[in-house]
Length: 398
Image (tube, rainbow, N blue to C red; front, side, top):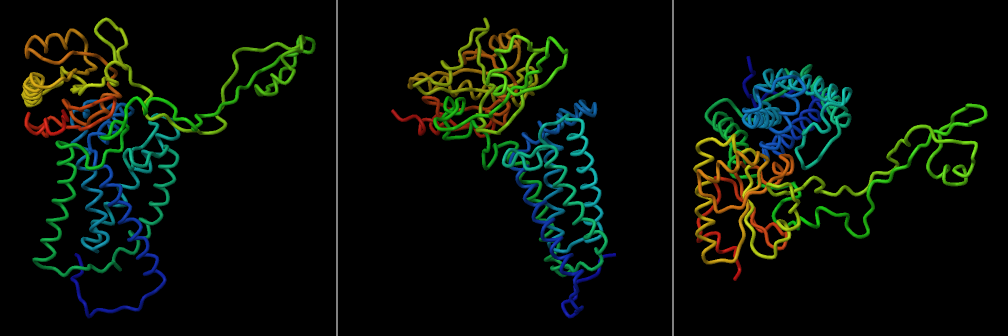
């Protein structure tokens, strides 16, 4: 049973209390931060969970990945908040220990077998490699073991009663409500390269003055006379060795990363028409207002999504009568599926095709809408938040 709050109860502060207090502060704040960062974009975290589902052959959970993400994020926030407040100390300590043991196994498995390139621990805000994530979890595990061992020394900060019940209710509401809201209305903070204000063409090239990754190439050289082989770098090879007729290159040179450079944010956007012709620049650099309606997989649209797409299509049709604009539909579905939808809904949207990965990064909604001009993202909407014609015209400067 939990010990009731007693403000008159005093105990001499010891070294253990200091260590326990620091552990609670560190773990609690980190769990809250991690939970809110992922709850800011539960759809993105859901995509990351799908990678793990694929590894462990749990593909049947893919349809529920976003809701599982909402639950995990909310659970993290609640555990962190309860830990800081000293509420339900034994239950929280057990929950933290079980959760960190599971995460530690998961990050080690990902790092050792190289199956998932990023754990998604802090969403797209702070990308971590699997080994960085594993080290982070080991550190957390140490602090959580301290919390678990001395859990009975934790004193609640809120007395038993109506005030505690109210705080618990509000914490649960905020923890799960954040993820639910952003699932339907897009992230509060967009950490992706297609965020509002970004120039998409600029995100696809190396900025002036920046240097990309630096590689060196390793050549394996064989001495024709002795048969001995030796590996040299491309600099050594070009510094006269290539002129030696007694040496021959064996196989293909190997590349090795020497220095990590600037990472171009968008490297995978390729838009094509039904015939396979690339139209990427034509779409993203359009000088006029350009509505890009993204529906990653048309054949996975539920009835509510179809209704939302019809409303988006109707609104854009009404806007096009009074404004000089272009509207396109980007999808990763086949041309046959897209044509079937077009015939069924009489779309005003021109249909083009792109890979699912960049489409998922464009807008965390299926369907979702971006408003572009000269390659700049002016506004983004989810299928629910897409406004009326009058509201949108505020963004269309005549």
